[in-house]
Length: 365
Image 1: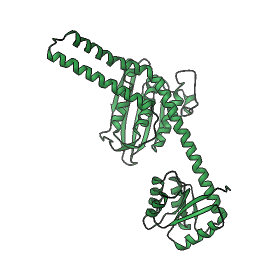
Image 2: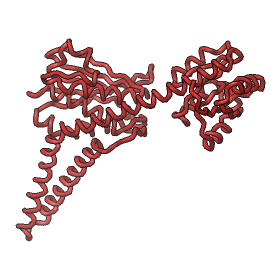
Image 3: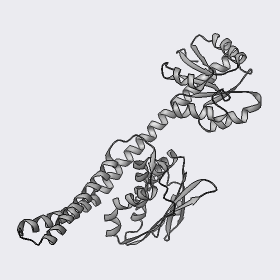
Image 4: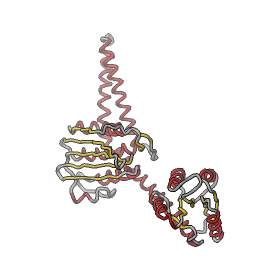
């Protein structure tokens, strides 16, 4: 076992269980113990002491069952948590592990060596999770820059259109100082509209190219989808792809999402669909509420070439490449899967070669 010092915060309100833990900790010099009986006191300690790991009972004076764990895990996500449980509530402890706890210990059934081993393993697993999260985040950032490169040409064309409008309107105003006031007003409105369009495009590119930490906030889903489609307007208009929206009546304005990363996922999916329809087709985006499961489904279907069956089991592999039109598929879909997973969601693909592909994103409400 490691010899480095470990600071442990124990949340337990049973004096006998506290004394039992103290005896075990005394056997291991590297362990230092803080003990409290309430979540509110634990938050005070965690704000002032360098705690490495939390051991907590699930039944406390100011917390019951999983609410105790969930509050600690939400407020202090970087500190590993081990559940202290009795013989009669192991099922609850396993549920806490599923929700993010590192392990559990049965009260009265442990000794110093077992306690030390569980603590060490919990710390190592948490460190591994953090390294893996950092790698995933780096992958998302790298993929965003890759997307910027692929989209830059189309965006440049899209910027040129409003710039041309601004230039022609400005030249008309300069060359005709006595222009009719109504016509003059129309030209000024065109300049303002085109300028607003340029600003919107520039902001979209900044969203993609700027380093971004995940941040969840209330986001209007349908506006998010429309924004992603608008970002690719030049592409689908040039290819004469019909855009069909069939949105659920509910606005879904209170969904807690990271709007920048979700928009990135949608742009990736729309880009894949457009690449499969170089000669035109239909791209349909639908939203559907599942009241029973408290979920929302976003389906993105196209009438493109579809994905060859031999590639279907590989499309979420970030290192999957081919020498044909599906060469960027692995990168795009692996990133989409990571982003949706970070929102506790799932991605499913239905596909028919030469008939099209349908991607379904399922998100919790």
